[in-house]
Image 1 (tube, rainbow, N blue to C red):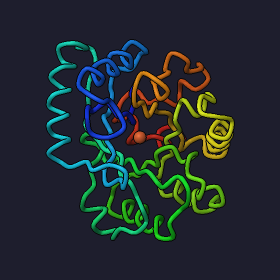
Image 2 (image 1 turned 45 degrees about the vertical axis):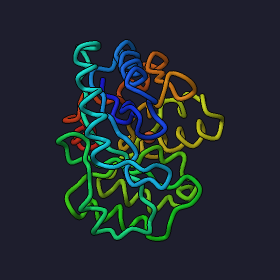
Image 3 (image 1 turned 180 degrees about the vertical axis):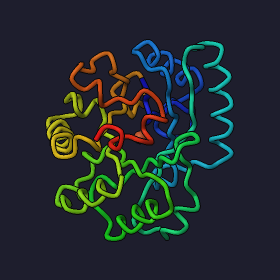
Image 4 (image 1 turned 60 degrees about the vertical axis):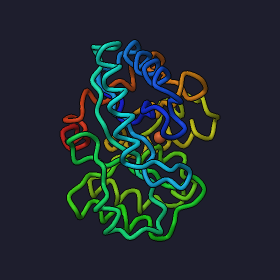
Length: 232
Ligand SMILES: [Fe+2]
């Protein structure tokens, strides 16, 4: 199974605090049945100062440590792009850091509102030939009045990454309700990732994945590229 949204890179954001924590998180994911993990540090988030050299250093360190300590686990480098809606869509597209060598781009919207120009950026990503994947759209309160826009996004090939802990109800009934509502409305466009940060409150919980949702977890990145197309 693939986990395409994790914060295992050490010392960059609110994910793994150090290399040992990153390895421990990687080991836990593998023990829970994950064979490929995409490291998706926050990128251009107003909350964190994550720069390219820092990502490279963290990636190199974790890759070496995981190769020796969790040899069955494949690591892939990606990013979780913050879309504020204030950025120039052309600049956003120029700075894309995809999931590995795929055409998939993980995009996070603000939790508390949907900026007026956010869709302009998201659809610029589509026009440029990338496939956007909205990170935990169940968290974005501004999306809740955007049924038609979400339908257009899905129609254009966009995907919705629901967070396993939200679906399971580990972060309150609202997240549980909104994530399941999206799954019910857009079943072909949804897939599940852990958005793991640590071994505490935001820990991976793949061992609690119901068998009825197993088909919502991709096997690998190649599967994601055709997600909802191959399944439809
Ligand atoms: Fe995340």
